[in-house]
Image 1 (cartoon, rainbow, N blue to C red):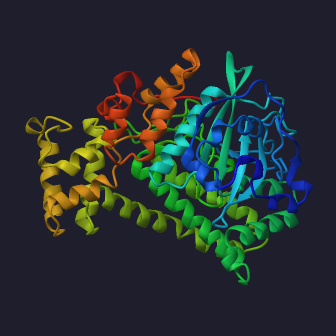
Image 2 (cartoon, rainbow, N blue to C red):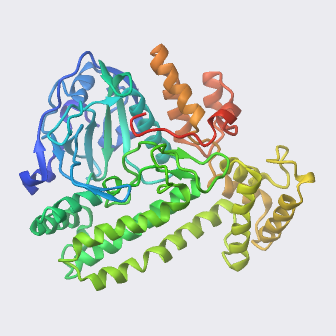
Image 3 (tube, rainbow, N blue to C red):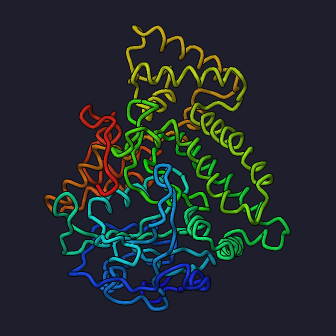
Length: 492
C-alpha cells in the first residue's frame, strides 16, 4: 500500500509527442470537499483504507496541489457523433494525469473530469456538474459490480463554485481510473487530418502497451483490430444481457480495450421496451437498446477506415465479418446463463425469441423477471397473474421443459441464475433520490448506500440493509410509474 502523495506514476502517453495532446495543469478550485469515495476502486492503485480522509487527498485530486510524478495533459481526438463526423472534440474538460503502476505491475490511467478548460473546450467552462458526476460515479461502480468492463470512479470531489448550464449548477470533479483512454476517435483525429504517420504511431503505441504479446507479429495491426472487434462485441453482449443502455455510443466514447466509457444519458431497462433510448437528444433512436449491437458494428467500421493504409481493406472486411457471429455467440452464452440453461440449441433460440416478445407485450420488468424465473415454480411473488395469463403460463411451461433436460435440481438452477441475474440495478428513481439529497440537503449518504449495495448486486445482502435500517425491497422493486422510460441529457 502507498498513499496518494507517493503514487508510482508513469507517463507513457507523453512519449507520443505534442501532436497527441496539450500539456496543462488542472485549474485550482475553491474549498474542495469529499462527496463519495470508492475503496474498491482505490485498491486498483494501492491506496490504503481511509486515504480519502486526508486533506492532502482532496488537494491533490482536485488539482490544487500537483501530484508528484504526474504530467497532466488533455488528449486530442475527434469522432462521429450521431453518425456525423465532428473534428472539434478532444479533452475539453478532462486531464489525464498519467498512469499509476500498482504492486501487481498493472497500469491504470488516472483522469480528472471537470478540471478546467483546455484548448479543446470549444468555449465551455471546462467543469463538470455535481449531478453528472454522481451519475457517472454510480454507473461506473454499478457496472463493475455487474462484472462488466468499465472505467472506475475513485471519487467525486465537490467544489464551491457555481457553473451554468440551463441554470446555475453545483460543480464537481470526478476522479476516473481506466485501463486506457484511447478511443476510436483518437485514430480518427489523425486519419481525417491527413496524418497517417501518427495513426501508425498511435497503433504501435496501443499494441506495445495493451497487447504486448503480439508486438513482434508481422500482422499485428490486423490482430489488434481483431481483438478490438472481439472485446467490443463481448462488451455490448454484456450490456444487452443486463439491460444497460449507454445512450451515446459515439466513436469518441468507444475505447479500444472494450471498456464502458464516458457515462452520460445512460439507463437500465425497466419495463421491457426494445426501442427505448435514455438520451432525450436521440430523437431517432439511433442509440436505442435494440440498436447497440449494430452501432458497435458501425463504429468498428469507422475505426477500420483509419487503418486501411496499414491493413488492406480486404483484410479488414474479413475481420468485420466476424463481428456479428462473435456478438451472437457471447450474447447467446449470456442469455443461457441468465435462464439457467446450458443446452443452447434451436429450442433455446425459440424460447428466447418468445421471451422477448412476452416481456414487451406484457410490459414486464426486465431485471425482476429473471429473479422471479429463478424461483419458479416455487415463487410466492409472481411477476404477473399467471393463472389469468395463458401466454405467460404457456411460455413458463415450455421453459420448465427445457430446464428439466439440464439434469440439475431446481435448487442448483436457482443458485446459478441468481449469480447471473442482479437483484439490484441502478434504477432512475434511485439515482434521483441520491442526487436530490446531495443537491438540496448536501447529504451524500444515499450515494454511499447505493454504491455499497451495487458493489454486490447479485446478493441479497441482509447485513447491509440491517446496518442502515433500510428496506431491501425498496431498492429491488420495479421502477415506479413516473420514472419509467425516463430520458436525460448529456449534462444532467
